Length: 115
Image (cartoon, rainbow, N blue to C red; front, top):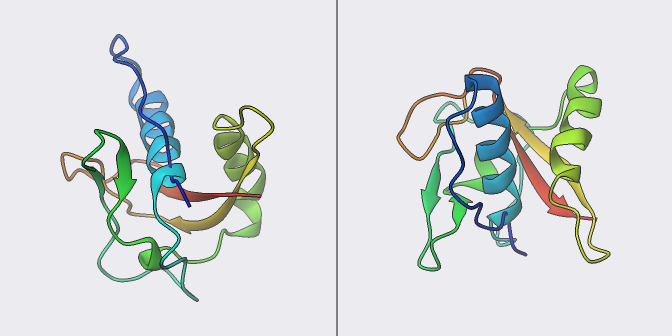
């Protein structure tokens, strides 16, 4: 299952905006071979650029469940990937998910899947 589609280059944004965009983009691109586990792994997942030039999570199984208090935020983030009748929802969350550059996202990251 695709994780996140590539996002065109955009002007610099606030860290939380960059985080949300990267997290969402990456979460939708990740493959379906593995999914979130019972709890966030000690070694946080990281975004990488796949062969098609799209952001993808390296280890979807490193995500844990989405905490109830973050479910609405996760739904809003994942909904930004909705298009052409395809809807995305949060399937996992990691509080220390990392960017392509290896830096932890301030607010963690969501693993989004097609509904």
